[in-house]
Length: 254
Image 1: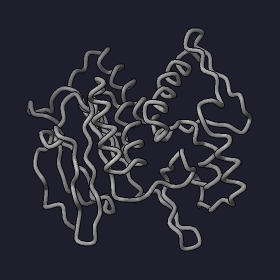
Image 2 (image 1 turned 30 degrees about the horizontal axis):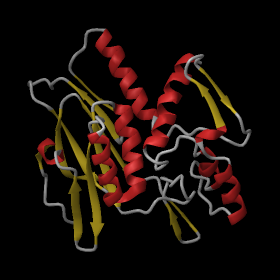
Image 3 (image 1 turned 90 degrees about the vertical axis):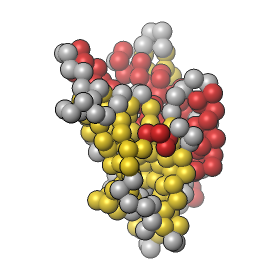
Image 4 (image 1 turned 90 degrees about the horizontal axis):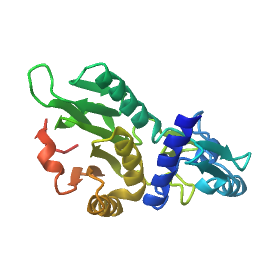
C-alpha cells in the first residue's frame, strides 16, 4: 500500500500540473464509453454521471501516512496513461541495481533507453505513421531517455458509424480529437507516459505551449506531433526535439 500511495501522490499531482488534460481517475468515463470492450456511446445522463464520478477529489491520498482511500464508490483509477511508464522506470531501476547499465526496454508504444547499444551507439527507435503501425516515418537516437507515443490508430472503436478514440479528454468526458500522434521524450518513463497523453488531449498548439511551460519550470521534455493532412503528415516539434533525430526513414508524407 505504501508504494501505491507514493506513486498515486505523484500521478495525482500531474492532473493539476496539466490542468486535467491528464487525469488518472477517468475510469468511470472509460466504463461509460466501454473502451475496454466493444465500445458504446453513453447517453447524456450516463456521461454526466461518469463525469461527476471523475476527478482527484474523489480520492484521499495521504502522502505522509502513505495511505489511499476512495471517497466515492463509483470512482476509479485507470492506469492506462501512466502504468506503463511507471513499470518501465521500476524495471530499469531493478536492472541497474543488478549492475546492468546498457538496456532498451520496450513495452509497446513506449520505450526506455539507458546507456548505449552493443556497438557503443545511442539506441535507435522508430516512430510509426499515426495510421500505420508497421510504417516508420522517423527514427530517433536515444540514450537515457524514454519515448512515449500516444495516438488512436489501433485502439479506437467504431459504434454506429462513429469512431470513438480510446484517449479521453477528462475535462469534457468526450474522446479527444484525433489529429495524428504525439511522441514525448523525457528522462523518466512515467513523465513521458503522462505527458504524451496530456499533449494528445490538448493537441499540437496547446500541447507545445504546455511543453514549453514545463521546461521553464525545470521539467525537461520534448514533443513531436505528427499531424495528418489530406496531402501527408506535418511534423510539429518542440525546439530541441530535432536534435534527437537520427534520420528520417522517408519524408513525412502519406
